[in-house]
Length: 191
Image (cartoon, rainbow, N blue to C red; front, side, top):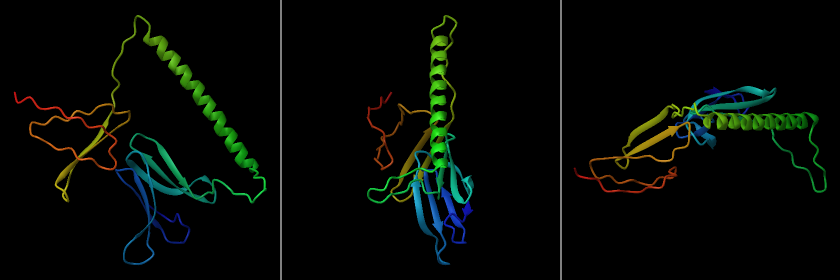
């Protein structure tokens, strides 16, 4: 998206990437865009949009991720610093916002407990049927021309416990910065 998030009268380029990186580029000169800000999310970004959403006068960037999370970055200051010995007082609006969020959090916690109890009761009944939930997998297998390697990227809406890669030719697994996996090898049965 393009949006004037810096408030300088020139629109910036907002980029959301598959690797979860959100970037803001500014066009200070006519040649190349300049990276002004970046933020890393834990999953790929499906869409990005700039605008005024939460509070009048403060622009925001909203990013939607693969699993449906909505993340917002705002220009609204989130905290103030007081001088030495000065007591920091929250505005009435900020106090009501915090109170509202606490109430919403308590309501959600109660709802989660109720749903867990309902699930426990239904799973212990004699008529219970268990099934594996269906979920979609976002996968990419791309060639990196620089080092002649392939990158396998798997993204699902639940935790990944194990990934089995089977090959009938010998392969080397390379460690990368974003990798959180523990790799173990087992030899192939030639039969």
